[in-house]
Amino acid sequence: MQYSEGQVGRVFTVRIDDGEDFIREIERFVAAMNIQSGMIHFLGAVRSAKVVTGPKEPVIPPVPRHEEIFGGWELLGFATIYPGEEGPSIHIHTAAGKGIRSLAGCLREKAEVYLVVEAIVTEFVGISAKRIPDERTGVDLPVFDRTLP
Image (cartoon, rainbow, N blue to C red; front, side, top):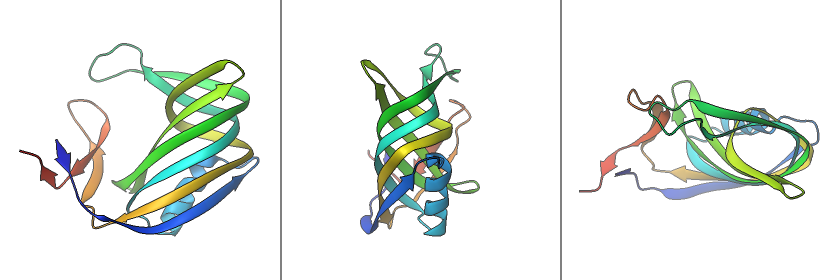
């Protein structure tokens, strides 16, 4: 187990509007505010989005299972922010639902907002972390400065 200790820095509330891409806009906001580490809580809805809903089989490295949703799905989610190889790296997970259908997974590539997505972005300060590719798993994992004995 690895970990890092820090404190809460700035806290932002963000509104992303109908037709905008939630992923691109939250990435743009994090970069513009120079947030190196933190978390994002969000709720709202999307017209369409791409979601990885787990691996096709539980093997390492995983082969992702992709789903695409259309037509106004409600979202509730959480994301982490750590420095990556090319700036802030944001890992976004969501639960999505429409009617009695639901799914959960990692938002990837696109998420076109329907009406609004509201987000709370919490910055962490003093955290020593970096998201880097892990050779064994084939996944970009956060790496921290401490280990628990």
